[in-house]
Each structure stands twice: as structure tokens, then as C-alpha cells.
Figure 1 (cartoon, rainbow over the protein chains, first blue to last red):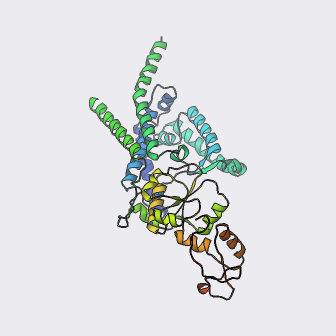
Figure 2: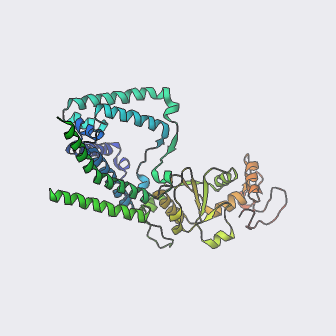
Figure 3: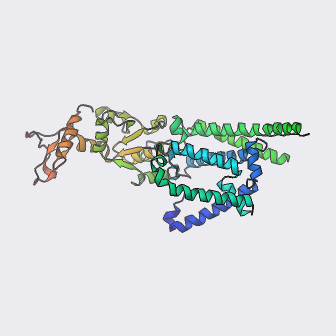
Length: 201
Length: 205
């Protein structure tokens, strides 16, 4: 049997929820260990003083990308069973801008706010309450903006199809970009630290 | 500290090697083989499942070709001699190993046909694996094209549209009386004449 395993077929939704809970807790633990439950740490990315977020995110992307590519090539993972969220170009651009603005204001994204809340940080609890309220308001507003909400649909639209290149080419470019970013991030951090030292009296 | 740095550099080097190999390999699926004795992979077995393959009828393909469906690309997976003898209009001949050159394009709809379900399944698994979003298989392959499009039995409410579609591709619709047994009506043409039907190369084939 190839992965991902059909948990819903094996025993209904309960096994899926149990596995999801386990994966979520493990993911949250990793985020906390990486220091991403701290809003100042995340804000360091926006000011280029702390590139931890870039390193963690790019590490996750490269690990998942290479892992899925080669496990599929070896016949262990069936990529046709991996869900690809559908693309809605206009709505997702707007959603991305709103998300980015919210993250810059709060210093936390939904995942990291849950981590911060779980560790008892007050800012994490506040942001988590805020995004749950946002989800509720958006859900209630969907009928009023249904036309826009479902506009620009492209289905499961991934980079290879958009660019007309192979999955291997996209993987290579992303890995090369990540390694370049890793190599440069240390220099950027040092440059920003030196600049901050010069500014201080 | 030095150990950690060495470990991180090792991971980076491994990622660089795997990323470069991914570029060389191109697709995250091994190329399918054409031999019937090929071990059927798990992905192929899944693709053999009808839930995994989106099948269309030969008539549906005929309507898409006639109506000029945007982004339609028809691939004939039979051997080249069978393709030369007859094929669906606008179809391109491809061996399974040649599918590595079929890259995903936005808005493209691929329709595959052959006379071999296993070959269809292997091709579908491969194309889905490299990112093709819309891949269809013609149910019954070339045989279905011959019987459903080029030599359809026409009766009932859809008789006129089926016959018109068949004639568009140079086919010869067979007319059937309501009380006749469809299994023994071959040869009755809708123009009233009687002649033995032969599968000959027709316009567009």
C-alpha cells in the first residue's frame, strides 16, 4: 500500500482526527523549539535582524519537497492521493494581503499564535482569539461575497503546470533558492547587527 | 558548535544533490515500461481502479473534437502500425516511454486511448504523477471509437444527433427498428440500403 494511507477508509474520521492531533502537537512542539512562539522573534524577520523564520520555513519546504519527490519516485508515496488545495487567484491575493498585514501587526501567524497561546503567552491568546473571530466573521460574510469568493478558480494549479516545466525543475529551483537564502541569511543578520550597533549611542 | 555546523552543511549538500538529481530525473515517477510482463506498480493498480481514472465515452471525445474544445490533446498509445492503419482525428501517436516529453500546460485536457486497459492505467498514473490536472481515458479505446462513433446503432430520441456526429467523422450509422434485436442489425443503413459494413479507413482516420 502506498502512502498517504487512507485513514478515513480504515476506520472513519476518528483515526484521522487522532493522527491530526498528534501531527499538530508535534508541529507545535517543533515551532516552539525553533523559537517561533515568540512574537519578537517573528518580527525580527520583518526587520531582517533574525532570519530564523526564513530558515525554518525554507527547511520545511525543502524537506517536504524533496521527500515527496523522491518517495514518489521510489513508489512509496502516491502523489495523486495528496490533496492539492484549489487555486482562486483574486480571492487568494486579497486573502494573502490581509493575512500578511495581520501577521505584521500581530507578530504571529495562526500556527505560531496557537503555540504562543499553549505556552501561556498573553499576546498569543489575544491573536488566537482574534483569528478565530476573523474566521467566524469571514464564514458569516461568505454568502454576501460568494461571487468574489469563488472567482478565478484554476483547480489544483501547481507551479509545474503554470510554468510548463517538470516537477524536478521546480524542485531544483526551490532547493537552489533555499540554499542561497541560507548562505546569505547569516551575512544579512551580521550586517543588520552591525548597523544597529552603529546607531546605538 | 563545529559539529553542528558540519551537520548543517552536510544537510545542505544532501539537499543540493537531491535537488540536482530531481532536475535530471524530471518527474517524481519512474518511466513506465511497455512490456506486458512489467510488474504493475501500486500507483498503476490504483489507477486501474475506475475511481482513479476519469473515463469518457468515445462519443464524448467525438463531441469535444467536433466542438473544438479548447486545450484538447488526444494521445494514441497503440503501436505506430495500428496508428497508421486508423486513428482518431487529431490524435498524436505516443509510446508509453514517449510520455516523458508531454509536459503539463495550463488549461490542457489530455485524452488517452488504446486497446489495452493496463497501458491506459500506466499512462494515466504517469501523467497524473507529473502534474497533469485533466487526464481522461476513452472507455473501450479504439474499438469503442469504431463502434460508437463510426458505426453506431441509432435509435430513439438521440438517433439524429448520434447519426449526425457519426457522419461528421465519415461514419456509417446503423438504423434499428424499435422491435429489432440490436445484436443482429448490423448492416442496416439509415438511408434504407442494405450493405455489409466494413471497418475501412474513413475520413479523418
